[in-house]
Image (cartoon, rainbow, N blue to C red; front, side, top):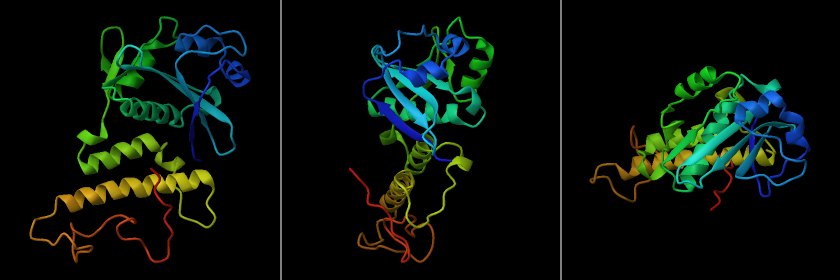
Length: 232
């Protein structure tokens, strides 16, 4: 299963949200159900599976400097790593906006606040002033290997969800996954090349032994594979 992250340009309290958010779910995120069809605040993204079914939502509010994140996983799709996937994507969105911290406020109406605190704490959130927060990992401050790990955590659901092999006629989502993987590998490879000893020729494109052998398919593409071009 591949998870798809799609921004809602004009978020509204549409039929899908009305269907998924019951009283308990609204209480867990501290929302009061708006009138059907009305516009809702903040930046919203929906998460869908390969069949196009909505399995969760994440939303972000950067009005006060740091990024308040809130997320929801459809009741029938819980315990599958979707919540962690959403948090990772929201952190990546916050990083793109230059934000230093993401935080979550557990509302008093949450049916199990202690469980929610434990869940966030296991993922690096620490108590703040009325919230739990985690520092955003900005890519320009990471070593190449950490940068690769950060990109992977933000771009992928659990490993079992995106353990996809290269195959013929990939669909759009699979092509995007391959592009993300190639791009992240290239970052690591560029970092490795940048740190090689000065006596190695800058023109060198291959080495006979680790750690100087190119590790990505951009620098050293396989003869039998086609790697999608990077965009941007």
